[in-house]
Amino acid sequence: MFIPLTLALASNLSTRVFARPPSYAVWAADSAIARGQGNGLDANGNAIVSYEHGEFQWGLRQLYEKTNNQSYFNYIQKGIDNVVFSNGTVHGSYSVTDYVLDPLRTGPTMIYLYGETHLSKYKVAADIFRGQLNSHPRTVQGQFWHKLKYPNQGWLDGIYMGEIFYADYTSTFQHANTTAWDDITSQFVLMFENTIQNATAPNNTGLMYHGYDYSRVAVWASADRGHSPEVWDRALGWYSMALVDVLDIIPISHPGHAKILSILQTLVPRIRDAANPTSGVWWLVITEPGRTKNYFESSGTAMFVYAMLKAVRLGHVQDHDGSIVRAAKKAYNYMTTNWVVANSDGTMGWLNTVIVGSLDTTGNFDYYTSQPTDLNDLKGLAAFLLASLELERLDTRAVE
Ligand SMILES: *[C@@H]1O[C@H](CO)[C@@H](O)[C@H](O)[C@H]1NC(C)=O
Ligand SMILES: *[C@@H]1O[C@H](CO)[C@@H](O)[C@H](O)[C@H]1NC(C)=O
Ligand SMILES: *[C@@H]1O[C@H](CO)[C@@H](O)[C@H](O)[C@H]1NC(C)=O
Ligand SMILES: *[C@@H]1O[C@H](CO)[C@@H](O)[C@H](O)[C@H]1NC(C)=O
Ligand SMILES: *[C@@H]1O[C@H](CO)[C@@H](O)[C@H](O)[C@H]1NC(C)=O
Image 1 (cartoon, rainbow, N blue to C red):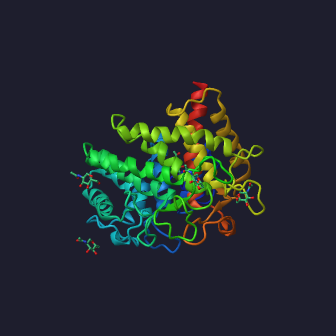
Image 2 (image 1 turned 30 degrees about the horizontal axis):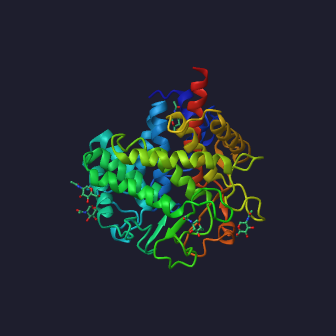
Image 3 (image 1 turned 60 degrees about the vertical axis):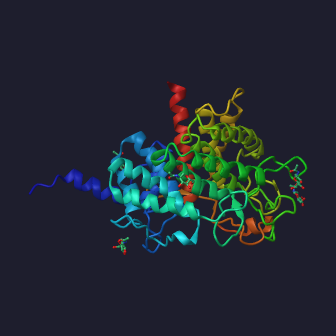
C-alpha cells in the first residue's frame, strides 16, 4: 500500500507545530482546539456543561461560517455530544432543579446543531433547558434569580447566559410567543434599571453595577436599589455582548427591540469613555481607576471591543466622529501586544483574564482584586476570538 510521504509528514507535523495563521481569530480558535479547550469536557476529561464552552462555540460557529473549515463544525458538535446523550438527556453536572442560568449558555449551540443536522436529540436537549425557564425562580418584578442559591439576585452575567438561549429558542420554535418576547425584554430592562449608576453615585461612570439583590439582604446590597458596590468589567462585558447579540434575534417589530437598542445606545459611549486613556483598555474594577491593586483585565476588554464594533457595524450605534471604532482598535492593539503570546509550538497563549468574580461574598474592591488571573482562560480567549472576528470584518470592509 502506498502512503504519500508528504501527507504523512504534514499531518505528523501539524500535531506538534503549526505556522501562525495571519488571522488572530483563526489563531485563537486553533490554539484553544489544539489544547482541547471548550469541548464539553473539564480538565480531568469529565463531561461538563459550561458557559465558557457555549461562548467559544459561538465564536467557532462564526468562524466556520467565515472559513467553511469543517473542523470547526465538527468540534462544536463533539463538544455538545459530550454533554448530551443520544436520547437528548443533558448530563455533565447539569440538573434543572439547581436553577442556574450559566449552563443555558450552551443552549444556542444545541438549537444551531438541530438546525444543521435535524437530529432530534439536540431539540430534546434544548427543550430541557427551555423547561428550566418555566419554573426558574424570579423576583417579584420578574427577574430570574441568578441561581436558586442566591435568592432574589440578578447578576449581569446571567443575561448573557440565559437570555440569548431564551431568545434563540423563541425565535426558532415559538416565534409568535409575545409573552416570551416581553419576558426577554423585561430581563434586560430590569437588570438595567436596578444596576445603572446615576449621577449621585460615588465614582460615577454611568455604567452598571455587577448585580443587585431585590430583597436587599446580601451584605453588599445598597439600601436604595440593592445594587452591589462596584462596576466589574466582565459582568458589564457579558451584558454588552448580550445586547448586541440579542438584537440579531428579537424581531424588530416587537417593542423590546427598541428598548434594548436604547440601552445599548446609552452604554456604548460610556464604555468608550471609561477606558483608561493611556492604554485604551479597561480596569478590572471600572469604578476605581488607578487604585493600588487594580489592573487592566483582558476578558472584559475583549468583550467591550466585540460589543462596540458589532454595535457600529450593524448601525445600532452611530459613530459619527469615528471615536468608538478608534477606541476599539486602540484596545485591540493593546490586547495583541500585551496579552497575546506566541508559544514555541506555534499556538498562541492568552494572558490576564481573571478567573472568577462573584457576588457570593463582599462584592467589594478588595474581593475583586484578590482573585487570581490565569493563562489561556477560555472566558477571555473566546472573547478575544469574538473581538477578532469583528476587527477582521472591519479590516475587510476598509479595503473593499
Ligand atoms: C481547519 O481548522 C483546523 C482546526 O483548527 C486546523 O487545524 C486546520 O489547519 C484548518 N484547515 C484549513 C484548511 O485551514
Ligand atoms: C437517556 O440515556 C441515558 C444514558 O444512556 C440514561 O441514563 C437515561 O435514563 C435516558 N433517559 C431517558 C429519559 O430515557
Ligand atoms: C410562551 O412563553 C411563555 C413565557 O416563557 C411560556 O410560559 C409559555 O408556555 C409559552 N407559550 C407556548 C405556547 O409555548
Ligand atoms: C442614585 O444612586 C444613589 C446611590 O446608589 C442612590 O442613593 C439614589 O437613590 C439613586 N437615585 C436614583 C434617582 O435612582
Ligand atoms: C471611589 O469611591 C470610593 C467610595 O466612595 C472611594 O473610597 C474611592 O477613593 C473612590 N475611588 C476613586 C478612584 O475615585
